[in-house]
Image (tube, rainbow, N blue to C red; front, side):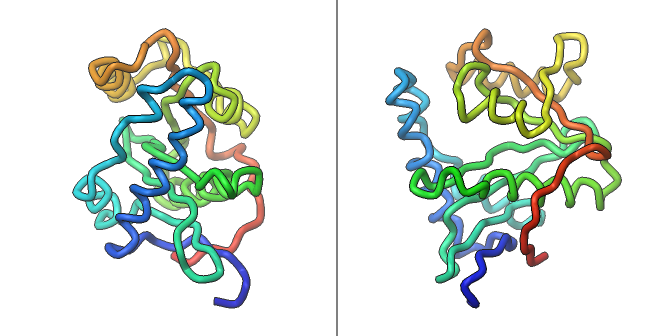
Length: 184
């Protein structure tokens, strides 16, 4: 590599590193009393492999081509849906997550989608408030699509408190991009 970190498609070899990133990125939840979230298992290799094979898993690689952040993207009711975006804690504050989200928005735009959605914690600084600063808005109950309702129900069945969770959406046409280098 040339000293410039890039976003690139995740490879099969990257998948265990994505699990490690997820575990490390979850640890700060324990510091705010959300131990169950901190101790939650990362996505399985098979789940990550499904995103990777579908071409909807990207990594931010360091100068040695090691993943330090990643994003996996689903499609829910015709919208791009960020299923997970995580960055190693030591790299927070460098806008890696934002650039990964930008990459997902580019992908969604290229695929004719109008919006990008996610579900998140309302009151965790690096969740809901962060996404709101990026341009996402909270969806009302009436705005929830069937797919988002199903995701929220699955989260509740997994033990996540529904009152602390929200669905958010951003309009792709008005998204504000950061500059980044991407390999597609």
